[in-house]
Image (cartoon, rainbow, N blue to C red):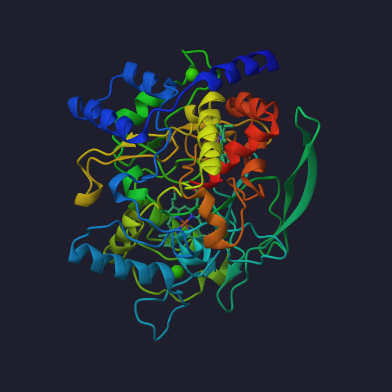
Length: 486
Ligand code: HEC
Ligand code: HEC
Ligand SMILES: [Ca+2]
Ligand SMILES: [Ca+2]
Ligand SMILES: [Ca+2]
């Protein structure tokens, strides 16, 4: 975007007044109530409307919780039945507790490995929040997974190492390798001459245990916060498909695409979960994590995650067939489904409030909201009553976007290319520091702050990023203050 058009937008912004939040939410509710299926025109209008969700402290609609401390991501949605609460507690313990190698006296908690990346779900989703990349000072098992494919067979599992390279193993089995990150720094300049430093890394696998990896494509990803997922799970497929604009017919440079995930019956489902939206349901996501991240067999993944050429792993004891049964999978999925979204922290001080309102305007004006869509609604199909027909504010369209060369991992995942990533929800983003003690963002955790995350946007996000670089400092600060309040 040229600085001339930016000035023009800024001019519009100055004269723009804020719609009071309550009026707006009520008005939107009425519109949605009248029509169940949102038409294409309405969706486009919603995306473009600058006054959309100026302030939405209830990020998870009526399922939000007022929480801003270290356990802000760990509360269930309010009003659950006694039975659903009990299932939440049981799911919580499966999520939090460490799994151990078989055979063990811990009946029902064994079968870890032989290869694994962490020994509990919460190791990677600490306090239900954001994991860390395997930096030397962080160590292993704190939040990341590494997918590998041979360069010659993009997206296919590695013939020896499988789909994921696990850097831990049970006793008597070799970890597949050690992930080494070498930091690389670069700078970008703002229009006012100040600079921001960006960090990324060169990724190398050292001590490969089963022979050379050869030429490979690798995708390193950190565990995201697991809040509000039961809302994202029940946004109707039709609404997500309406948001897509694969051939950019409206010519705004943004062409979100649905990740159509193949199914056993030959049809496709709308992918929603994971950094590339490769999992259509929470149950599928949980079973993929049990198998790939922890080495736990389950109803969908009956075979252990090693390959036949890994002889020490082949000989390891099994923890049962499957090691995690359908009941436990259901409890884990239920747990992830009902973890609530904390409310936005809106300041009472009028200066701070004005700054955040300014940030809201900038978020709309430089098109962040075109991908980080502010408002979605569930239909009536959730198994949890409280999650039905909820209007909420996730800041995602659940679509895949080409984010350019710098963010690309060059590895296909299902139908998603190496350059495509799902727009991540931004709810809770300002609480990661409180909950997890760090502010690392993006799929591989390379960004050390919200600002760095913005500055990595390329491809379809390039125009927004360039517009951010051209903002005066006060406006950049306003945008960041707004995002930190989410
Ligand atoms: C070794 C680290 C690790 C472990 C262990 C792990 N996860 Fe994850 N989790 C991740 C990563 C990385 C992603 C993103 C995956 C992707 O991009 O495909 C993820 C994604 C998810 C998501 C989707 C979130 C979203 O916003 O789309 C859910 C739900 C989830 N994990 C639940 C679990 C559960 C339940 C367990 C335990 C059975 C578990 N995870 C174990 C790292 C981990
Ligand atoms: C073209 C769609 C698109 C636009 C426009 C866009 N984003 Fe994003 N955003 C994404 C995607 C996709 C990612 C994930 C990229 C990755 O992890 O590699 C992302 C990641 C982020 C993250 C890190 C989130 C996390 O959980 O780690 C932040 C913060 C963010 N965007 C803010 C913004 C802001 C602010 C703007 C406007 C200046 C913006 N985005 C514009 C698609 C978009
Ligand atoms: Ca196992
Ligand atoms: Ca492996
Ligand atoms: Ca478009």
